[in-house]
Image 1 (cartoon, one colour):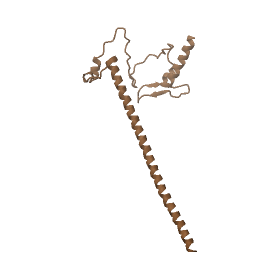
Image 2: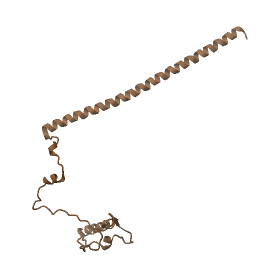
Image 3: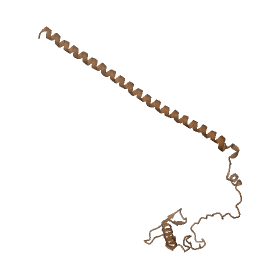
Image 4: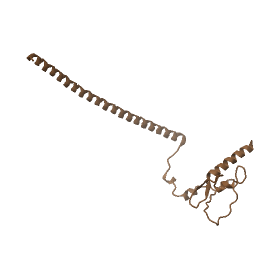
Length: 180
């Protein structure tokens, strides 16, 4: 190899090394600009969210001002004062008025527990047909002997849910057929 070919080869290697170094610098610069762009996009999103929050607060406050103006002009409502609150059910009952002459009787509820000293209750009558309710519904079983009742508590009255629903559905159908 001649001296000139060595110099030429070293020149090409130097030019290739310079190109690789410049490419590496360019790559670093591109990554830095990309990071700046991502940072700017995140800041834009953050500012848009803050702008939306401020717009919402502005609209809310303007709505509150509008509502306050309507209240002053049209309604005249005020916030409750401390003396308007009550401390007990007895104070609440003091605000009640006696029942009117034509008022219906209040609905009274009673509980029943299991025991032998219970009185005999009259037969249940359907309010739709006026006929007594089927005994199997009251017993809490359907035709196949499956239980239709739900136990409310240990020793408490059993309420036949599904059987009662079937009986009411049948009675409604019969009442509908009778009115046609």
